[in-house]
Amino acid sequence: MGIKCLDIVDVEAFAAGQVKPRRARAIQAHVARCDKCRAMLDEFQANEAMLAKLRASHQVQLRSKAELERLSITESRVEATLRQT
Image (tube, rainbow, N blue to C red; front, side, top):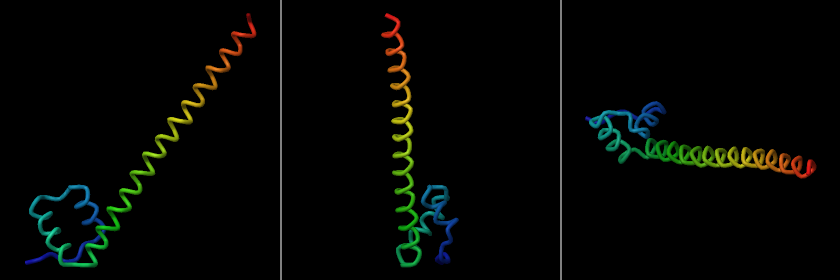
């Protein structure tokens, strides 16, 4: 016996690998037959991939900003030291 169509909770748990193996196999079999659920899973996975890229980009931007601030502080210290000599 197959499973009913998925809801977003099922999709999220399946995509995160948080379902038991028997449930995962049932979901895989259902998604293979159900265009609606396959589209929902595909969309969810694409959104997760996009969010991961955005998070990574944000982290790079934060590091860059922190690096710029650190360099600015260092530059200020060098300028202050040069003025003293």
